[in-house]
Image (cartoon, rainbow, N blue to C red; front, side, top):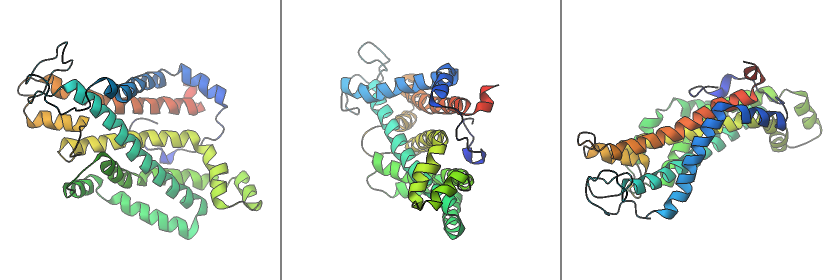
Length: 297
Protein backbone atom coordinates (compact mmCIF):
# COMPACT_ATOMS: atom_id res chain seq x y z
CA UNK A 1 0.00 0.00 0.00
CA UNK A 2 1.57 3.30 -0.99
CA UNK A 3 1.10 6.69 0.60
CA UNK A 4 -1.83 7.68 -1.59
CA UNK A 5 -3.69 4.40 -1.95
CA UNK A 6 -6.74 3.41 0.00
CA UNK A 7 -6.93 -0.20 1.11
CA UNK A 8 -10.48 -0.99 0.01
CA UNK A 9 -9.54 -3.14 -2.97
CA UNK A 10 -7.06 -5.45 -1.26
CA UNK A 11 -7.97 -8.94 -0.23
CA UNK A 12 -7.86 -9.69 3.49
CA UNK A 13 -4.77 -11.39 4.65
CA UNK A 14 -5.62 -13.37 7.78
CA UNK A 15 -2.86 -15.61 8.96
CA UNK A 16 -0.03 -14.06 6.99
CA UNK A 17 2.40 -15.47 9.52
CA UNK A 18 2.80 -15.64 13.26
CA UNK A 19 3.80 -12.73 15.44
CA UNK A 20 7.46 -13.70 15.56
CA UNK A 21 7.74 -13.87 11.80
CA UNK A 22 6.07 -10.48 11.37
CA UNK A 23 8.33 -8.97 14.04
CA UNK A 24 11.40 -10.38 12.32
CA UNK A 25 10.42 -8.82 9.01
CA UNK A 26 9.46 -5.56 10.75
CA UNK A 27 12.91 -5.22 12.33
CA UNK A 28 14.50 -5.75 8.91
CA UNK A 29 12.26 -3.35 6.99
CA UNK A 30 14.11 -0.07 6.34
CA UNK A 31 10.95 1.90 5.55
CA UNK A 32 9.27 0.91 8.79
CA UNK A 33 12.39 1.62 10.84
CA UNK A 34 13.04 4.99 9.19
CA UNK A 35 9.44 6.17 9.39
CA UNK A 36 9.00 4.90 12.94
CA UNK A 37 12.23 6.54 14.12
CA UNK A 38 11.26 9.96 12.75
CA UNK A 39 7.73 9.66 14.13
CA UNK A 40 9.01 8.58 17.55
CA UNK A 41 11.45 11.49 17.69
CA UNK A 42 8.76 14.02 16.81
CA UNK A 43 6.32 12.41 19.25
CA UNK A 44 8.89 12.71 22.07
CA UNK A 45 9.42 16.38 21.25
CA UNK A 46 5.66 16.93 21.26
CA UNK A 47 5.14 15.04 24.52
CA UNK A 48 8.15 16.20 26.53
CA UNK A 49 9.04 19.51 24.90
CA UNK A 50 6.28 21.61 26.53
CA UNK A 51 7.60 20.53 29.95
CA UNK A 52 10.91 22.28 29.37
CA UNK A 53 9.72 25.42 27.56
CA UNK A 54 7.33 28.22 28.42
CA UNK A 55 3.66 27.30 28.66
CA UNK A 56 2.74 30.55 26.91
CA UNK A 57 3.76 30.14 23.26
CA UNK A 58 2.26 33.49 22.22
CA UNK A 59 4.06 35.53 24.89
CA UNK A 60 6.31 38.39 23.77
CA UNK A 61 9.68 37.32 25.14
CA UNK A 62 12.39 38.72 22.91
CA UNK A 63 13.42 41.20 20.23
CA UNK A 64 11.38 41.30 17.05
CA UNK A 65 12.52 39.48 13.90
CA UNK A 66 15.55 37.99 15.67
CA UNK A 67 17.43 35.26 13.81
CA UNK A 68 18.11 31.90 15.50
CA UNK A 69 20.56 32.17 18.38
CA UNK A 70 21.60 30.41 21.58
CA UNK A 71 18.86 32.27 23.44
CA UNK A 72 16.12 31.70 20.86
CA UNK A 73 16.90 28.49 18.98
CA UNK A 74 14.53 29.20 16.09
CA UNK A 75 14.51 32.96 16.33
CA UNK A 76 11.53 35.17 17.04
CA UNK A 77 8.49 36.41 15.12
CA UNK A 78 7.66 39.98 14.13
CA UNK A 79 6.07 40.33 17.57
CA UNK A 80 9.00 38.95 19.58
CA UNK A 81 7.45 35.50 20.15
CA UNK A 82 9.81 32.55 20.46
CA UNK A 83 9.40 30.36 17.35
CA UNK A 84 10.84 27.25 19.01
CA UNK A 85 8.34 27.45 21.86
CA UNK A 86 5.53 27.84 19.33
CA UNK A 87 6.89 24.91 17.31
CA UNK A 88 6.95 22.58 20.31
CA UNK A 89 3.38 23.45 21.34
CA UNK A 90 2.23 23.37 17.71
CA UNK A 91 3.73 19.92 17.23
CA UNK A 92 1.78 18.64 20.23
CA UNK A 93 -1.42 20.12 18.76
CA UNK A 94 -0.66 18.38 15.47
CA UNK A 95 -0.40 14.98 17.14
CA UNK A 96 -3.52 15.59 19.21
CA UNK A 97 -5.69 16.56 16.25
CA UNK A 98 -4.37 13.55 14.34
CA UNK A 99 -5.12 11.15 17.18
CA UNK A 100 -8.55 12.62 17.96
CA UNK A 101 -9.72 13.26 14.42
CA UNK A 102 -8.17 10.14 12.93
CA UNK A 103 -9.30 8.01 15.86
CA UNK A 104 -12.89 9.23 15.58
CA UNK A 105 -12.95 8.65 11.82
CA UNK A 106 -11.48 5.16 12.31
CA UNK A 107 -14.03 4.29 14.99
CA UNK A 108 -17.00 5.41 12.89
CA UNK A 109 -15.66 3.85 9.71
CA UNK A 110 -14.95 0.52 11.37
CA UNK A 111 -18.33 0.29 13.10
CA UNK A 112 -20.21 1.17 9.92
CA UNK A 113 -18.01 -1.08 7.77
CA UNK A 114 -18.21 -4.10 10.06
CA UNK A 115 -21.97 -3.88 10.56
CA UNK A 116 -22.67 -3.33 6.86
CA UNK A 117 -20.32 -6.08 5.70
CA UNK A 118 -21.40 -8.65 8.26
CA UNK A 119 -25.16 -8.07 8.30
CA UNK A 120 -25.64 -7.43 4.60
CA UNK A 121 -29.11 -7.05 3.12
CA UNK A 122 -31.17 -3.97 4.02
CA UNK A 123 -28.76 -2.91 6.77
CA UNK A 124 -25.91 -2.92 4.26
CA UNK A 125 -27.92 -0.91 1.74
CA UNK A 126 -28.88 1.77 4.29
CA UNK A 127 -25.37 2.14 5.68
CA UNK A 128 -23.88 2.09 2.19
CA UNK A 129 -26.26 4.86 1.13
CA UNK A 130 -25.29 6.94 4.18
CA UNK A 131 -21.62 6.37 3.42
CA UNK A 132 -22.04 7.45 -0.20
CA UNK A 133 -23.90 10.61 0.84
CA UNK A 134 -21.10 11.69 3.16
CA UNK A 135 -18.48 10.57 0.64
CA UNK A 136 -19.73 12.86 -2.13
CA UNK A 137 -19.92 15.91 0.13
CA UNK A 138 -17.15 18.44 -0.55
CA UNK A 139 -15.42 17.84 2.77
CA UNK A 140 -13.11 20.84 2.79
CA UNK A 141 -15.88 23.21 1.74
CA UNK A 142 -18.17 21.89 4.50
CA UNK A 143 -15.42 22.28 7.07
CA UNK A 144 -14.63 25.82 5.92
CA UNK A 145 -18.28 26.88 6.12
CA UNK A 146 -18.85 25.28 9.52
CA UNK A 147 -15.68 26.51 11.18
CA UNK A 148 -16.07 30.00 9.73
CA UNK A 149 -19.32 30.48 11.65
CA UNK A 150 -18.00 29.18 14.98
CA UNK A 151 -17.19 31.98 17.39
CA UNK A 152 -14.81 29.84 19.45
CA UNK A 153 -12.79 27.15 17.69
CA UNK A 154 -10.80 24.73 19.80
CA UNK A 155 -8.62 21.75 19.01
CA UNK A 156 -11.28 19.27 20.12
CA UNK A 157 -13.97 20.93 17.98
CA UNK A 158 -11.68 20.91 14.96
CA UNK A 159 -10.83 17.24 15.48
CA UNK A 160 -14.54 16.43 15.89
CA UNK A 161 -15.49 17.94 12.53
CA UNK A 162 -12.49 16.37 10.80
CA UNK A 163 -13.41 12.94 12.19
CA UNK A 164 -17.08 13.26 11.28
CA UNK A 165 -16.24 13.98 7.64
CA UNK A 166 -13.27 11.64 7.08
CA UNK A 167 -14.71 8.19 7.79
CA UNK A 168 -16.58 7.15 4.59
CA UNK A 169 -13.67 5.69 2.60
CA UNK A 170 -12.56 3.73 5.67
CA UNK A 171 -16.10 2.37 6.08
CA UNK A 172 -16.13 1.19 2.46
CA UNK A 173 -12.71 -0.42 2.86
CA UNK A 174 -13.65 -2.26 6.05
CA UNK A 175 -17.02 -3.28 4.59
CA UNK A 176 -15.32 -4.91 1.60
CA UNK A 177 -13.09 -6.98 3.85
CA UNK A 178 -15.84 -7.85 6.35
CA UNK A 179 -18.14 -8.89 3.49
CA UNK A 180 -15.55 -11.42 2.36
CA UNK A 181 -14.83 -12.75 5.84
CA UNK A 182 -18.54 -13.06 6.67
CA UNK A 183 -18.82 -16.00 4.27
CA UNK A 184 -15.94 -17.99 5.78
CA UNK A 185 -16.54 -21.33 7.49
CA UNK A 186 -15.35 -20.21 10.92
CA UNK A 187 -17.88 -17.36 10.88
CA UNK A 188 -20.67 -19.74 9.86
CA UNK A 189 -19.74 -22.02 12.76
CA UNK A 190 -19.87 -19.09 15.14
CA UNK A 191 -23.36 -18.24 13.88
CA UNK A 192 -24.52 -21.83 14.35
CA UNK A 193 -23.22 -21.77 17.92
CA UNK A 194 -25.73 -19.01 18.70
CA UNK A 195 -23.27 -16.19 19.34
CA UNK A 196 -24.51 -12.64 19.01
CA UNK A 197 -23.51 -10.67 15.95
CA UNK A 198 -21.32 -8.17 17.80
CA UNK A 199 -19.41 -10.99 19.49
CA UNK A 200 -18.75 -12.65 16.14
CA UNK A 201 -17.54 -9.35 14.69
CA UNK A 202 -15.26 -8.61 17.64
CA UNK A 203 -13.90 -12.14 18.19
CA UNK A 204 -13.95 -13.74 14.76
CA UNK A 205 -13.95 -11.09 12.01
CA UNK A 206 -11.95 -8.17 13.42
CA UNK A 207 -8.93 -10.20 14.67
CA UNK A 208 -8.33 -11.40 11.10
CA UNK A 209 -8.06 -7.76 9.97
CA UNK A 210 -5.82 -6.35 12.71
CA UNK A 211 -2.96 -5.37 10.42
CA UNK A 212 -5.37 -3.98 7.85
CA UNK A 213 -7.21 -1.89 10.47
CA UNK A 214 -3.96 -0.53 11.87
CA UNK A 215 -2.80 0.64 8.44
CA UNK A 216 -6.20 2.21 7.84
CA UNK A 217 -5.83 4.15 11.10
CA UNK A 218 -2.40 5.38 10.01
CA UNK A 219 -3.86 6.80 6.80
CA UNK A 220 -6.70 8.47 8.73
CA UNK A 221 -4.19 9.85 11.25
CA UNK A 222 -2.13 11.48 8.51
CA UNK A 223 -5.22 12.66 6.64
CA UNK A 224 -6.63 14.36 9.75
CA UNK A 225 -3.35 16.22 10.25
CA UNK A 226 -3.32 17.47 6.65
CA UNK A 227 -6.96 18.61 6.77
CA UNK A 228 -6.45 20.42 10.08
CA UNK A 229 -3.25 22.04 8.81
CA UNK A 230 -5.12 23.25 5.72
CA UNK A 231 -7.84 24.83 7.85
CA UNK A 232 -5.22 26.43 10.09
CA UNK A 233 -3.29 27.80 7.13
CA UNK A 234 -6.31 29.68 5.79
CA UNK A 235 -7.01 31.14 9.23
CA UNK A 236 -9.75 28.79 10.42
CA UNK A 237 -7.75 27.04 13.11
CA UNK A 238 -8.16 27.23 16.90
CA UNK A 239 -8.83 30.73 18.21
CA UNK A 240 -6.76 29.94 21.29
CA UNK A 241 -3.32 28.36 21.48
CA UNK A 242 -1.03 27.61 18.56
CA UNK A 243 -0.59 24.98 15.85
CA UNK A 244 1.91 24.37 13.07
CA UNK A 245 -0.67 25.41 10.49
CA UNK A 246 -1.39 28.65 12.36
CA UNK A 247 2.33 29.36 12.54
CA UNK A 248 2.53 29.14 8.75
CA UNK A 249 -0.60 31.27 8.43
CA UNK A 250 0.89 33.99 10.64
CA UNK A 251 4.22 33.82 8.83
CA UNK A 252 2.52 34.36 5.46
CA UNK A 253 0.23 37.07 6.84
CA UNK A 254 3.18 39.07 8.18
CA UNK A 255 5.38 38.65 5.09
CA UNK A 256 8.00 36.41 6.67
CA UNK A 257 8.97 35.07 3.25
CA UNK A 258 9.56 38.54 1.81
CA UNK A 259 11.48 39.60 4.90
CA UNK A 260 13.73 36.56 4.68
CA UNK A 261 12.55 35.19 8.04
CA UNK A 262 12.92 31.55 7.02
CA UNK A 263 12.96 30.41 10.65
CA UNK A 264 9.30 31.38 11.01
CA UNK A 265 7.75 29.29 8.21
CA UNK A 266 10.22 26.49 7.44
CA UNK A 267 10.16 24.69 10.86
CA UNK A 268 6.35 24.27 11.00
CA UNK A 269 6.32 23.16 7.37
CA UNK A 270 9.03 20.60 8.06
CA UNK A 271 7.15 19.49 11.20
CA UNK A 272 3.95 18.74 9.28
CA UNK A 273 5.90 17.07 6.47
CA UNK A 274 7.89 15.00 8.97
CA UNK A 275 4.84 13.69 10.82
CA UNK A 276 2.70 12.92 7.77
CA UNK A 277 5.62 11.66 5.68
CA UNK A 278 6.83 9.28 8.41
CA UNK A 279 3.28 7.93 8.83
CA UNK A 280 2.97 7.13 5.14
CA UNK A 281 6.45 5.61 4.97
CA UNK A 282 5.53 3.43 7.95
CA UNK A 283 2.35 2.43 6.14
CA UNK A 284 4.33 1.24 3.12
CA UNK A 285 6.70 -0.66 5.39
CA UNK A 286 3.85 -2.30 7.30
CA UNK A 287 2.26 -3.42 4.04
CA UNK A 288 5.52 -5.12 3.11
CA UNK A 289 5.68 -6.76 6.54
CA UNK A 290 2.12 -8.09 6.54
CA UNK A 291 1.93 -9.03 2.84
CA UNK A 292 3.95 -12.21 2.08
CA UNK A 293 3.92 -11.45 -1.64
CA UNK A 294 5.79 -8.19 -1.08
CA UNK A 295 8.33 -9.86 1.21
CA UNK A 296 9.58 -11.94 -1.70
CA UNK A 297 10.31 -8.91 -3.88
